[in-house]
Image 1 (cartoon, helix red, strand yellow):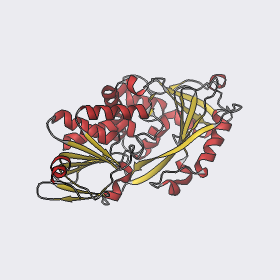
Image 2: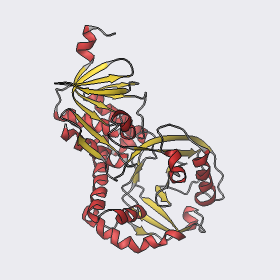
Image 3: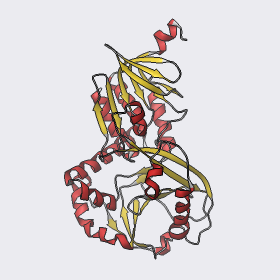
Length: 370
């Protein structure tokens, strides 16, 4: 039961954004910058942002060579180029908004480990570099030559190493803290621990029903819940994908610095100071990992540990300090959905595991739709 005063002051807005991840915050911030006098509210079902925005590996990347080669098998060159461009634009927009220092952005560069079975991808190296030249005006993927002494990788498994000087890493907790601070500085209201259960369009507003028996009204609604979209809007067939991540305790003289991709990007690892963070392995159990349940399983973490011991850190003593998971959103197309569901409701979902790269760009485009 709410009072007249609460109904007047806390329940009616010009725009309500559902989801406080990168997309939701970016959408709200850009809308408020255009309309500073309008009331904006963000509703988040978790106490912290749910999904993947604060649970990912912190890669500021736009695609490895093998991923782009695989995409060229399934999509046109124009589509692949547009996809990379959108990712790169999103990263630049994020850096400009947050500031590199505020999210520990380090341009260490990125690497891709190529095993014997994947050496054929190198035949497309020049083709892919030429394709990407209109965006970057330089060679993106460079053959470094595999140097075991420097990195310590197992040379029975790793046969070549590619280097991408344009890739970086970030601290996603600091990134989200900075975005939240920006949003609040613009008088954007944020309520956490409230799950939206239903949207009903009325003549002038959208009625938003929540699990707390509170009903909000807004002239416009932006749905930015990515992997969880199908629960609220069943017409969108978004497939959740759980990504499991582990991080070690500090490792003395860790030889690894930067971001790394392995086995066509199915595994990814990086340093976090003198710790090593690694995630992936979803391809080992696609059906089991098509879930919105936050959990880690030995079916995934055990192969990750074996990869650490046998390929990445052979002969190095390490201990796992923490495990966690994040939920990504996928679909039948490798591009985000940014569209108006109606005159009053717009959606920005299906990040395809690239939320850091494209989230700010999706928020930019979504705010222009509203």
